[in-house]
Length: 257
Length: 290
Image 1 (cartoon, rainbow over the protein chains, first blue to last red):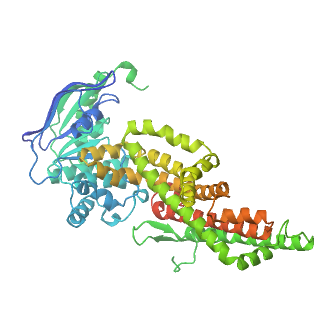
Image 2: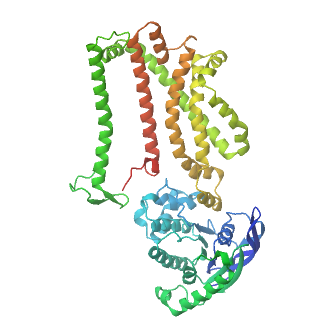
Image 3: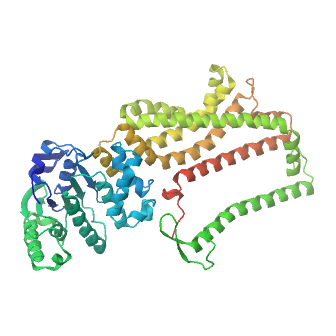
């Protein structure tokens, strides 16, 4: 499952004005890993993710993504906390966007868009508009769009935070399945300990003020995980271990009473 | 729509999307649509009848308030001259609106793309806007040889500003995450404009178009009033002035009627265009579904 490092962050820092959002962060992510960036708000986890995506410029340091495969238009897929769909475009056109931007014609793109929609279970909704879909369905469209260009790396920024619990666990299962099917390397940002333990092969705990990496914790449970793992002793133990680490990083005034 | 069910609130499924639709709701919506036409037209008809009755009953002289029947008669009698004038005003209005759209959108795009350009040019656009067109018109009529061109410039000045400002705001209104996504996929400037910024600006643009359509007509009529004595002119405003000089009040009303009619047509056209463009996605054009 693990192989060569695919993403390397080398002493990366990011300043917004005089706020140090990410301080001297180094991290290597190997191909096929499912890594969670876990931490309280303001710890720079989203900032780190956006720097990997090339959306935010770095203040210092370097991020390297290992040489792309020949046939990939893009190395990266990105899923935001909101579905971030174009409201004026159909589900089909929304998913087609990355291919269109890469110069893939509609004829060549169509089977790939259809396949991506099938993978997220939305084949019937190709001609719908985003406003006609539920929150969970919009998120699936967003995931289909991230996968349509066949990226090696999937970056997700608290993608399921706004969804209800049932939709959320269903999407978690589907996501693990998809990333296993495609051999994806996933970097997943969340503030939910349960989510991080269930989903990932490795949890990177971050702390705020300044945003920094405080612990890098591999999870040994077999992956992909089955539904039963959610109620297992191992799951409870791992959750406790990670929660303890996370709590140790919090400032007293950050804990909600 | 569907006729297979007569029970209100029956759930049916949209053939394209599989989304459930409520037939009872559709029927209510259609009834509302029909009412929205029937009610004002009925009221207008009643008002005209009342007008006709009052004028005849009180024997009000036609140089004060002509009866609707006399106005209609005048419309038919002076049809040729009034139509020529209407055509002149229609041409002026639509040409100025078209130029306002082209100019407003191009300058707006330039403003949205370049902050320095906006900072240096925007004050001039504001000056142009805040100075009443009636006040500038005489100067423009002096400097521009062709009266038609002078009138066109006046109408353009009035219609141009809302298009410009809305285009600038609209182009800047695109969702930040979508912008980021376009950055990640290394979209070219053209792709960004075509697939993200322009569609995001459309709701703003369509709202401005509805305002600018009315303003173009106002600009065209006002400018012609100012030009009144300055040579070749055959628009509806000139017919009104001319009738006023000759105390041909029925003809004045006939010309006024045509100006209003043109205004209504422009309003309906721009509303229709807005619905065509935004109807399938934008909140402002979507009828409440709950």
